[in-house]
Image 1: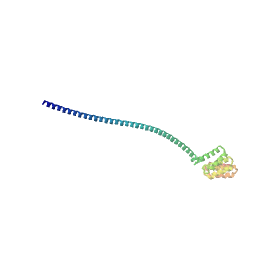
Image 2 (image 1 turned 90 degrees about the horizontal axis):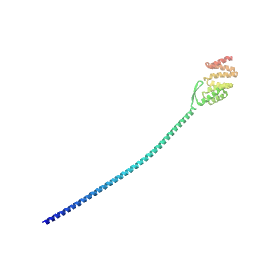
Image 3 (image 1 turned 90 degrees about the vertical axis):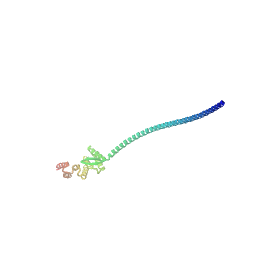
Image 4 (image 1 turned 135 degrees about the vertical axis):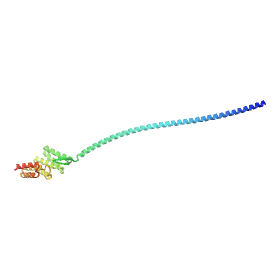
Length: 255
């Protein structure tokens, strides 16, 4: 009986040991699996971390390259801006020079045109427009007369009348031409030019004087009868003129 009991106890002990061993073995497998699973997780996390680090490094490298690229572009842009600024300054200088040149040319052109534009003049009570050259030539001829150079004055005045036959200076030019000829004792030519003035411009301011001058030339030519008639005609035609008063005195002396 005791032997059976011991056998049963022994068998039960063996069964427990076997069960315990199996349990321990089962626990070791689970642990291994857990460890392997943990290692796989750690490896996956390491790989993910490495990949993330690698991506981050690539992004940093790309960002660095981008920044370098941007810096190069900025330098190029600065260079381009500086070049454009230089070109703009040059263009502004060229424009300023061009405007100054155009202004100078316009002034020269205006001065040249002014030489041909009619100017307002007043001679012997008559106001009219005359070309600058016409005005200059008449004044130059008159200046020669006033200097007492009657020969050259005649040439200048004859030349003026020939160049400007329709000029409103012509009556005055004929008057001074006659006087220059009278002063040179060329009385016949003087009479011709005085009468040209009288017939051409009977209402001219100088006409009464021209009539009186004809009478004076006639007297110098010993034509008293002709002079008397001229003086009488002067008094009738221009009774209010100073020349008419002089004619009256002259007639008195002729009687």
